[in-house]
Figure 1 (tube, rainbow, N blue to C red):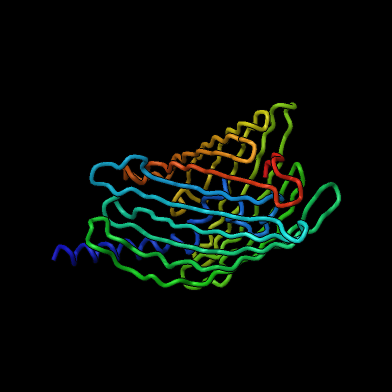
Figure 2 (cartoon, helix red, strand yellow):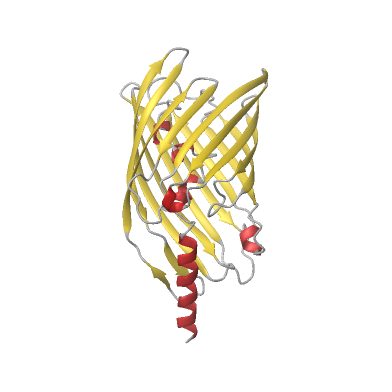
Length: 309
């Protein structure tokens, strides 16, 4: 009887959560460190072979009788054909606790390939048109009590497109992702832009904004994100991000980040302070995020050149 009641509770929480949890949305929340995740046209824009990974965990140390949430993200992109084109690959494995932290976990997987065609414009500008194709797992509910879970392991196809412009000081992009989604799955439109302000030779501030418009079948909500990162000698970056697009299941959050540039490596840490207003201790605890990026020359001699985006 207890197992039956637990399963009913899991199914109820799952169906309620699906109203706001949309296919592929888990990938979008990592864009502060992985811009490719909200625009396939970003592939190759750094003009090097770029490999990056993110590990997210909440809480950092498990609380007694509460489940922890762990998520892993991987990105790869590089220019090809003498920088006229680019390819990319994305993968993620994400969990998130549902309910009061002891009830259930949503599981979500995704694999995506990206292709971009790049045009050279005046004033060192580059314009790219990108497409994305992949598969996304329909969320699965796992019980946290060690008694198995319920749901489905089916994978849905997913494709998207975007455009992206950047020069040394600014960027602008528009993308429509998950175009073929149906039912309750989100087909978001992202509009992003930013500018680098030079305070002096040793200190610059990279600013940015992101607008996300949900599709009508996922609520039709429009939200804004704002961010600013101060870079000292192009070695140390300290950032603040106001995110309406997540930390988890569209909760608002303030994200603080710290980055260190070490020649071909970049190391980053971020913590988001959830603003959901939920009285649940686990839901209000933010995610710890660790990022590692490694970039090498793609044959164009541009390895080791610091880039703000």
